[in-house]
Length: 308
Image (cartoon, rainbow, N blue to C red; front, side, top):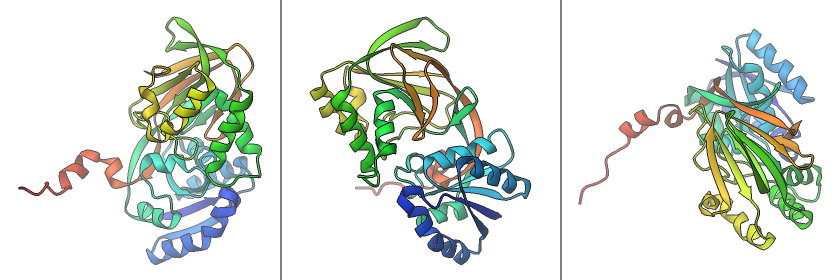
């Protein structure tokens, strides 16, 4: 196996670039052939991925979730394999798969992991790997992407607090899998392929990357103070117990709103509302921890609890 490391050296405030030498040393120590290619843009990353596939190499995305999504998009529905090394601010896709947040430690998954087919989400010609959201999240994401005052995953909390100050409720029209539409007033409509976003927020705690379904999370209207109290519970996935939060599982959903919003996915803007979001089942082959690839086998290998 030869790895083509597709690296965004600026991801995570330069984290990926700083850690590249250590990652390459760890791969060399494990006897894994590899080479590194630095990206200039997401389009360049796609070109590098296509080149890796043509050469019969495994494309390893080393950067943030946006880079992973771009590499996965090239690989979807083909024979190529996706490797993941977390190097961004949030690293939510790696978190959802149980891949270590330290990229050097994550090299062990590239060496000893297994291949699993994972779902992706699709909006028109665009795909995503994690969570697509709009409304309040549109404003919070834009603020987080534009700020230079805050670094690391705290930037998402900063974006949310800034967005809350000027937020006014919006009305969304949500159509689940072509059924009758319903109007809801509130903060956010999110469509989750995986369960984490925003640097560790467990927005859709029961989302599964291999079930062929999307979890639609609707955060309804509430007072700002109550929303502020709810925000920390998202990191534990406990917000879904609030009456103002609904979760609906579906293979597709159409969303429109009473005022313009940008749909963000994997931290980047991908479309303007209205949008139709659908699941692409088993779209990409990825190297994941062995326990994730075959949880039943992992459970069978686990030692039995000690008796009394």
